[in-house]
Amino acid sequence: MRVLAKTIQVEIKLLVRDVATVLWVALPPLVLLGIGTGIPGFGDPQADLGGLRLVDVYLPILLVFALALTGTMSVSTALATYRHQGVLRRLRTTPVGPVPLLAAQLVASLLFAAVAAVLTIVVAGAVFDVAAPASWGVSALALALAAWALFSIGLIIGAVAPSATVAPALGSLVWIPLMALGGLWFPREAMPTVMRQISDLSPTGAAVDALQHAWFGTGAPTSSLLILAVSALAFGAAAIAAFRWE
Amino acid sequence: MAVVEVRELGKRYGGRAVVDGVSFDVADGEIFGIVGPNGAGKTTTVECIEGLRRPDAGEIRVLGLDPQRDGREVRRLLGAQLQASRLPERLKVGEALDWFAAFYDDPADPAELLELLGLLEHRGVRFAKLSGGQQQRLSIALALVGGPRVAVLDELTTGLDPQARRDTWGLIEQVRDRGVSILLVTHLMEEAERLCDRIAVIDRGRVVALDTPAAIAIEAGGEHRLRFVPSAPVDRQRLAQLAGVSSVEQHHEAVIVAGDGQVVQTVMAWLTREQVVAQQLRIEQPDLDDAFVALTGRSLDEADEAEVER
Image (cartoon, rainbow over all chains, first blue to last red; front, top):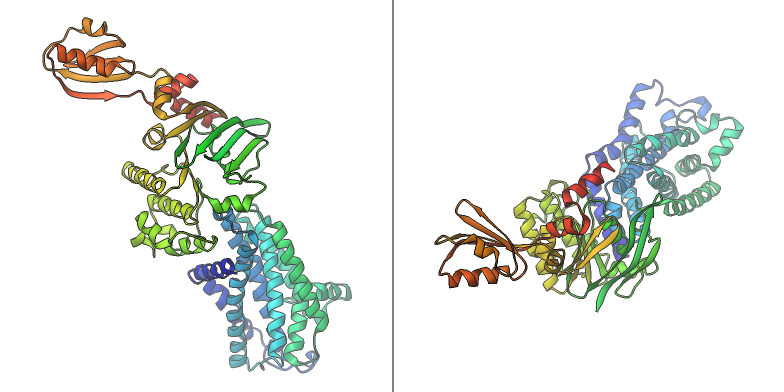
């Protein structure tokens, strides 16, 4: 635990000192403002959305979008860079094992993702008058599990990527289908049956579903939360298995 | 007692034997050098000791432990400084040391290490902003922070200017005086001669000599040389007939006499009898560069170049 705590502390400091972190935190609310002011009718109630506005539906998607982006781009690159620069090789000569190193990456990124999420929710409330989630607890749980799963995917990409420069390219290849399944380009409600079923089982689709339920208070998203928990465990285990020092 | 034992170590890459039957012991409290040209298999050998690579043949024990089987225990007892490994660019010196200290149950005092390595005033500096010498010193500090019994230092003065190099050598001796046995990898013969109690000279994956630097230099047939300006003319022919003298040369007013290990005493005694004073006296011991040529039939520079071409 001492090793984990210390490593998390180090990772947080490194993230704070990285200019790119500001971007990862500021990007989601800025995207929200950008599309909100760019798309006509974004803030008007829509009959085919059951009286909800586009901004209401898109907020959970945007939160998941930010997590997927952080995982596939930032977490993956950080790990690949460590390996590329020989940081992992150096660590390998010490008694530390891979698990605290990976867990620290995950937890530190999670803290920054939480700040970004809260910022996005605040902007959504202040600018577009989006209501706070009906259940903060379920929302937080869904976001945390989704972050765990998606950041673990980032750790797998970071382990598989042959170099630090390839990691973000590989990340975007993974990010695009993940976000398609999450409903970024067309909402889950409008998906063909097969795609919708795949979406239900994907970490991004399950996360968006769980968040939407938590937000609008339309029942407990048990199956989606379960899928998220299984994804988190499975991708987490895969990240440990895929890890390589050199 | 040996802290590191290597027996018939073998490692092949793509069918080529990089390390081929290397054996040596590092005794407790000594500075042991692995010396040889680039590509001789030095780094591969120590990486096997550090547990970073799995040997194809032979046996390694670090304080009685197998680096492959008892990896974690070995890493607690052995500190390593690697060639070309970096730290996160934005990590500060003091943070790096505190972080690594957390990996060990009974770490050394990071503040004391920073002081020892002259990094105290740089503790708040980011890794990327450190000079090459400072990065090397931090790397040594990290190798020592676990309070190891053995420290493996790989090419630690490469890329340093002569002053920084000498400072680092002084530091290594201080570390040894604290009771840490040191396994030093270098392709600088000067470094090995200055620092090491014993060395293994490795060429093309094999140990070609193993002894104290001075013994290897002499064993390999290197010559002692003394150069002086005589206070009065001397008879060079009589000088050349002294026991153990192999050659006498004259460069302007200086006389250069070469010979075996006794040559300095013989010549000085003779000069005294002749009532001649040896002014500006300079004595050259046979060095390891000469020994390397004698042992392998080529100079260290040629061996390095051959490696580049391969």
